[in-house]
Length: 76
Image 1 (spheres, rainbow, N blue to C red):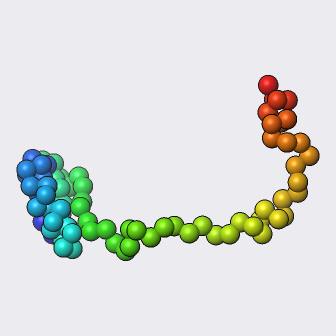
Image 2: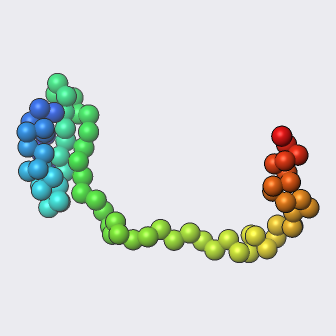
Image 3: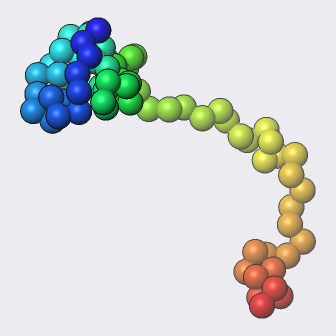
């Protein structure tokens, strides 16, 4: 793991990102104390999140007695 200061990070960001892309971790320090860590992204970042099917839950909800627009009008 590389350890670099903030000033050096600004000067070498492209090189540091290349190192991270190859699997290395980079620890960024301020006055010798760790403040951030650059790590490679894990897994497939292009994967679209899949949400569970909510149809069974929706089927259990009773129908509304009033429309949402009527509820809003009654409120104001």
